[in-house]
Amino acid sequence: MTTSMPTSGLQIEHEESGAAPVISLSGALTVHALASLQAGLKEVPQTSVIDLSKVTRIDTAGAWALADLERRAAASGGRLRYRGASEAAELLLDTVRRAMPVAEPAPGTATGLRALFEATGKRVVGGYDFLRGLVAFLGMFLAGLFRVVIHPREFRFTSLVAHCDDVGLRAVPIVSLMAFLIGVVLAFQGATQLRQFGAEVFVVDLIAISVLRELGILLTAIIVAGRTASAFCAAIGSMKMRQEIDAMRTLGLDPVTVLFVPRILALLLMLPILGLIADIMGLFGGALMSWIELGISPSMFRTRLVADIDISNVIVGLVKAPVFAVIIGVVGCHAGMQVKGDAESLGRMTSSAVVTAIFAVIVADALFSIFFAEVGM
Image (tube, rainbow, N blue to C red):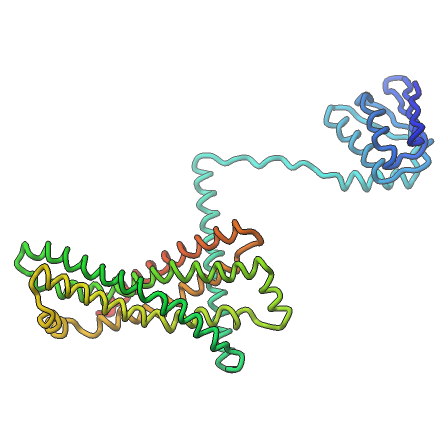
């Protein structure tokens, strides 16, 4: 049987010969004859001989059609053989065979303890890579800070002032309100508990130590982490999405010096000030509630505060502020640099920056508490 393809110049002849039928191809086996070739070979037995001696020309598309037919025959348990192919045709067929995609077997899904260990291992490795990235980013910031110290003209003072206003001045209302309410709550709860033992006067010590050592700076850092880490990540991530950071590098500007150093340095300057404001407002709220609930006058509160509370409590609280500032700034800027080219990535990294910054601040505060307890402060 002979099938003629006049539009493509390709002819396909089927001949029954012995155990394996012979399919003779003649004409140009090119991309123009691809549809005709596939239709003509659709019903070819899985074990056949394909005669290419009359093929005048073969290109990559024709070689791919033959290789695909050969692969499907092998998957069904058959085998195709070629005869009469020229050296160029054999070489092209071999090249196409090697370039054909190979389906990789789907990896087996782990179950039971193996799945648990595998997931735990991936999380541990991922956490290690993340910490290594943060440490590397901290090193970049320190190198950039050292560079602007040596070359002050490269430092952008206007950017520093703008970021100080953003992360510091604009955060004063929410920090003050938070600290005031914390002082009120501590005084109220402390009065309720200490009244049972007739020790209401010790509520001053409770408020002062709690606010000055721990809650004032810790809650301030948490609020700043929520405001500032997200803002840093969103700003830098948006610039990366718009390829502005690549443009800065093209212009010879260092993103570390221009973007990261002013932001983190602004946090270093403003977080201790915000912590001090939180301490004052917390004590004010506690004194007001003590006066209302327990009848402890402001003068008595102040006398008790000065007499019984050591200045080391204030130092312990404010010493944490620079460390918290570096943690928040590095986490926010690092998350911004991890943003990809879509809005979904920006939202995901912004949320991750807030969660990571708050978690890291709480862990650092716990380590500080252990350290100061060991040194007797």
